[in-house]
Image 1 (cartoon, helix red, strand yellow):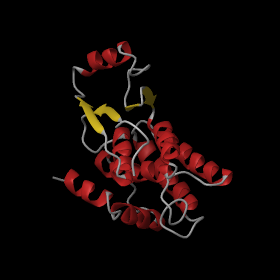
Image 2 (cartoon, one colour):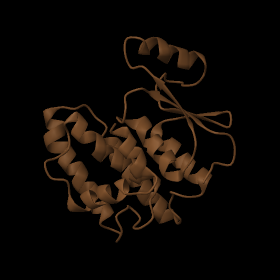
Image 3 (cartoon, one colour):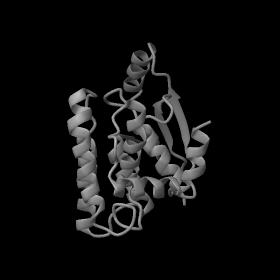
Length: 199
C-alpha cells in the first residue's frame, strides 16, 4: 500500500523506540509505506535544532514529530495518524459511531501522557489500562474495532510498549490488552520491524 504521491519524511528525535514518533514508524511499517526518517539528537543541541525547525516553518512549536508530505507540514502524532488513515482509506472507522470510538480512545490515551510521579504510576495508570480494556471489550477481535486494526491501536500499543521502559506499566496488564499486544506484535510487517529494533 502506498500514499497517493511522494514519499513522506518523518522528523523525530533519535531516541530509539520511545515515544510519539515511533507510533508513526509503526503505522508506516504496518501499512508498507516507504518513508524517510530524520532523527535529531536529544541532547544539549536540541534547543538550537528546535529553534531551527521553527525558523524553517517545519514546526510552529519547535516540537516533533513532524511529517512532511506533499509540501504540507503535519504536526502532533494523533492528528498525523488520523490524516494518514484517511489518506490511505484504511485504519479509520467506517461509520460515524466507529470514528467517535476511535477519537474517544485517542483522547483517553492523550490524557495518560503526563508527568511520571508515584501517584501517576500507582493511581492513574492502572485506571487508564482498565478504561482501555473496557473499550477493547466492546468487540470480539484483538483490536479496538475487532479484527480490523485502526490508528488508535498504534498509540495504545506504543503506550504498552513504552511503559516498561519508563517504569509505569502496571504489575498486571488486563487480559484483553495482553491479547491485543500479542496480536499487534505478530502482524506480518510489524514483527520484523520490532525484531530489528531489539538489535
